[in-house]
Image (cartoon, rainbow, N blue to C red; front, top):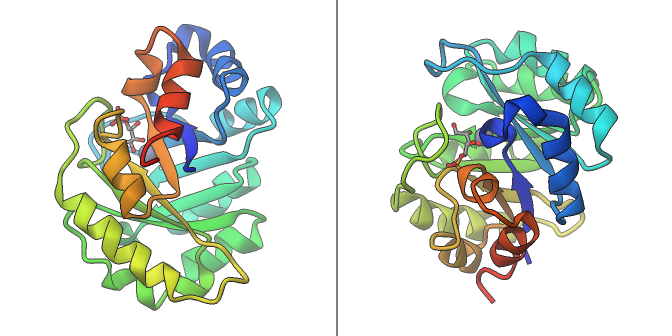
Length: 219
Ligand code: DX5
Ligand code: ZN
């Protein structure tokens, strides 16, 4: 069964801490926190304070997705703020080895995110340093966009790449963007092990039911 990671980008910001607590009570496995810098993507969201706040409110792992042009600076900053996973975009990280090492040295697990049309060959050289692969199902920047179908083929390709690795260290395969009850089943059958969902979960009148629905996907 996939792990379910609600993205607080779609939460009610007037009740942010209650929303995090409600998702934990409803059965979420991780909390996904989207960091946007207004450069890598046009939108702006949270600073490291958001991670510090979430850390005080939940015991769930915090999955921080950096959509920033300067992951060299911000990767370790968010790791030190309390992130359990920090993912950087391959498209933003010319010094990928340095970035992934610095995230680990700062105490977090390291992830690599790929935009919808970025080739998965980026992953192969980085696998030894990765704990998480994030495949974007939408162009990053906003919640509530339609799932881009090419991501399904890429999910199967990457799942096959990961299944050939030694089983001593799991690397999660996360899909982020456009994940709903409609897109989730095929993604899980293709090998996704973590589903991020923002608008589908937070717009649902019953968080427990919506999480259970995603978790049952692919069975
Ligand atoms: C998109 C973000 C996603 C977003 C997903 O740039 O990285 O985490 O919150 O939202 P939905 O699930 O609504 O596509
Ligand atoms: Zn995200």
